[in-house]
Length: 97
Image (cartoon, rainbow, N blue to C red; front, top):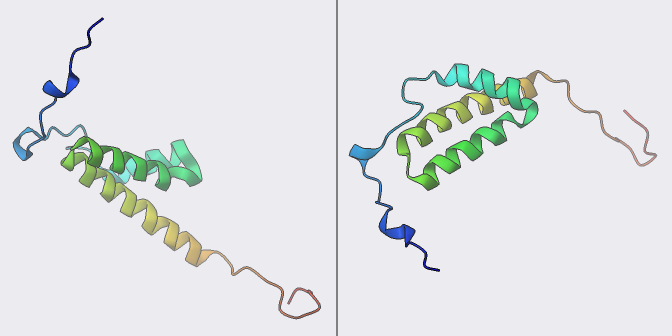
């Protein structure tokens, strides 16, 4: 049995051939959709999308997903700032402060 060499069918991506699936989409709406779909793991899921686009040579999609990632990261940072500080053990008797 012979197998076709798939490397001869792959062409290196060029900037002129960079077709973006997400070119006219709104990163803010996509961030909301990712948050609804993945909850607390939305930032991680979007990071994987950005990495996949980068590895596939889809620069425009990679930039889009990076924008979405930045929006989600910023909202997580704001949420952390609004949360009350955790209380820890403050003395050697292991009693809460």
